Image 1 (cartoon, rainbow, N blue to C red):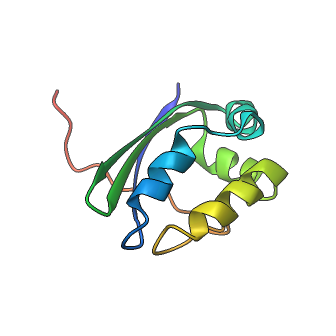
Image 2: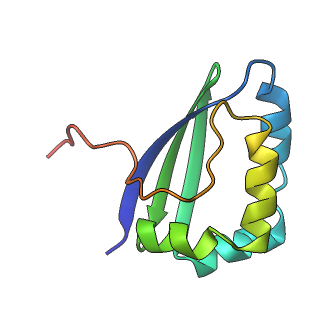
Length: 104
């Protein structure tokens, strides 16, 4: 059963349009790497500089380990690192934002 992981990131001021432009055309190599790593869906919402991600993935930790050194992801993270307040180097064992409540 896949996991649903919520994430929060923040853009650097003034990076909104460049971030949107980057996501208008995700490299095919990155899409393939994400799918190979078990990502079923990844959605992002933006409010001002705040970004909210919802990731549906077979195993979040395994996905992060699989992508940590993947060339397509390394290039993408370098690009995103220029736009985000805190860059993600995939070295940690984060588990996303803890869920507080869900409609039964």
